Image (cartoon, rainbow, N blue to C red):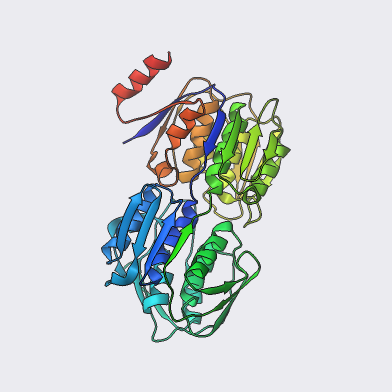
Length: 430
């Protein structure tokens, strides 16, 4: 079992290049099999979730040519199996995007119920509601979602709740349905827009992504395309908060600052200096940090995937802060781990009250999920002494070269897998 071992107390300083957005890439890869022609995708993040999805797609017959770590050619013309029951696919949430892609193209899909991080209830009822509205019969049998349609016909669909996954999934299926589909109460996240742009580059007719209403005119076929995935706003935000908690000076490169507006606003509120450029953002943390209130909301609100990183920062701010988590109910599990490092917090329902402390002390903690794991690494970087973070497989699902990028910013961090390596690190750092 691999772990991160960290000697804290060194400010993060320098520049870091942000990779492609994992959440956009997973949906775009699934959508790539909706054409019989070759699709060229670059700025692909080299993380575990992406690799698992590509293996699953290859398993149903898609031709996958991994040109390099960040570029892939996909040809879905040889897909011959519509049953995705690959063991590992159950571990990633985005496996359900293959439902919309296969249903749209082939009118049939069978996909194992998705897994992912245990951060709370993530029902797929809105996905199924959308597929049924397009004319598909959808059942759940033996742990699989089975969707089948003789014809898919455009429909007017109002989602009961804002759901990124359902918006993308139904949008993919509707792209090849007969007639016009109107989706209302949709998610507006940057990766929703990115998937719509990708589908349009293949010949789809989708308008309004990023607004309240998406209109889709179905087409009979899609063609090949070349496409570059947007930068990952959550990876960028994680390094930005790394600067905040370590009293550092970090510039994140290859970003779209508009996607980071909510994160930037909170960094400024707690006392950081933030400078925006065309495709970069610089965060400088000098003096004391100040308390604030945060509520997670769908985009353009503060992202739930940045909530643990924000929580670590608030634990080091003067005064009392509150976080209200309106998306996932199990997103505060990292606070129990942070308490081992000296943080003081109280959870009541979907809110957490955090009392600022002067500093963290190194401890052994465990990553409860992807974003919480990254946040605990940030806490270790800010702490006095040695921190060991267990269960880093969660972190590797969503961050490429995480420890290497941190080392390039001056962090003392290593990936280890034995007690001998831990002792060696401790001797090296004194």
